[in-house]
Image (tube, rainbow, N blue to C red; front, side, top):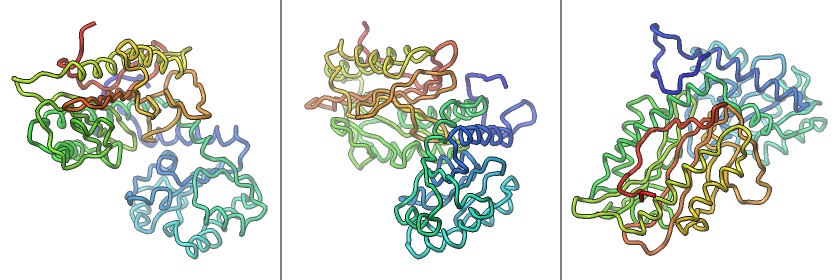
Length: 414
């Protein structure tokens, strides 16, 4: 399909050809099956939210703190994905998801006795039915009780890494996935615009987040990119206070907004920092310097995001540009960018400095959220800035999906 680099709209309309969810789901499953075969596994059992959605399209209720404990899916080479679901989802699945040919109700994967019942009486018969009980089963994530129960009841079962094949399947986005990501980013832009328009002296960080979340749900978003919408004002960004609190926004504050949006299973992740000031005030020299370092660094890093270059090239270009402002060593101790898709944060990463971080070559179809953050202490009104763009790697170079403007008051002209 031809990819338009903009969001057409989220409705299933009759007047133009849009993405077929059924066809996209089939293409995703085919990619996952190819990675399954390549890995030498007999099956992959997934519990992570993004992996089960990738394979089944189930949009479940999310219970805080119970991710990977509620719903899962089993991928076998020549079978439709088998769904394992919470009892609260079962009736809806039976009635509204006809593409699911086999589904089993399971408990929350938490209490030992129920986990043993799951493995012995629900999952076990499925493994035996498809002759996997003595094979190689890839697992993306599980708690220790579940892992030990598998070993106890199926001593001949070899438990292997099932998450890496799923990450490889998801890394290069399908054309239909890129369309979904464009739509999610358009909603994220609208959410951010609402938040920016809410910034004024005397409102609280939580007021800004509330207005933004109203826009998210009004436009059909599923949830924000992060469970805790991130609105930090003034000194709350130095160091970053990564929530929204009851802090009152004041004249002269830098205000950071990172909320994003999920739509149809895909995430739009973009963010902006703006200045809260009346006509009588203006950003300080320190605030403009930090903002400019992040702004020009972001541009330099994105320019490297093209086939033949690497995540290391992008990180180096970004840091080198920030160094010109005397701030190359002031980045937050976190990666500078991350992959994004049906997972909110996923490999590859840009600027990861922890041991073992791999170097990746950029390839067409990769999508990233690039999000440098620099903060300095002791600045009245805050000296912390993050700017974040959604970037698609194409054959012709980087395509920036996000469109929310930057705050010109904070950019020093070079």
